[in-house]
Length: 113
Image (cartoon, rainbow, N blue to C red; front, top):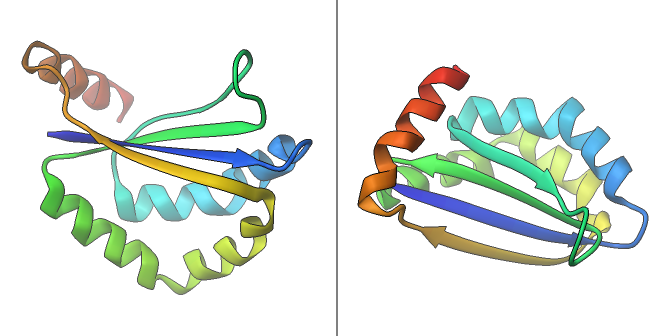
């Protein structure tokens, strides 16, 4: 099991507009293709103008397959063209949960469905 954390630092003042666009267009596409959204956040304290989202995958191969499918999706490409100008910096991490936390993640995901 892996969790991908993607962090986007936006240009000042763009968080509300980015979230509105994402909710209307980006989220339905990502949920359809990537599947397991673990969380979607913005910072209140600390680094400002930052969006953080996390996705759960059974393994790295599943992540690669789903990310490739997302990248090839025409609707996703159209959406990215609209929000890319909001983004100043991107960082991505792939994390493995501690063995004692995997069941907790699975239960949380099952409850969210």
